[in-house]
Length: 172
Image (cartoon, rainbow, N blue to C red; front, side, top):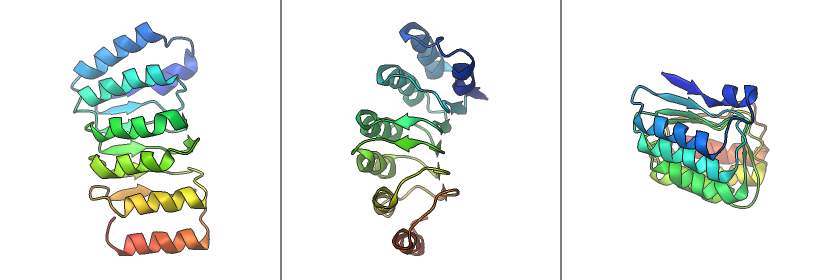
């Protein structure tokens, strides 16, 4: 079963407050049939997002988390990666996300170190060369990710060469 919070958020943007998020967290913790949670496009403050992610961590049955089209702010990046690294999520979509601030490398390090991620969707993420190369450096240390969607991303020649070396090393 899947739950699409993103579409609810687009239809009812004022629906989410601390009380409703606590109810959602409780649902996420207890509902064992839930395999896919979509937060695509949801823009909530960090406190409310943390409550949702606590529910994701508590439910080992949630395998696929879609946080596409989110703006992942600096103060949330490292914590987000750490939270995911303690969850049962094996597939993560960050499609069309934007990363703001200087903690993005910490985010990718935490995702690639401890996580159970097998598939990572980065379609359309505008990294820029420096950030993409930092991501590839983190990826080269990963042992679980088997598939990465890098479609709709443009790369410089240096980034392409580094990507080729990482892929050739057999990491993914």
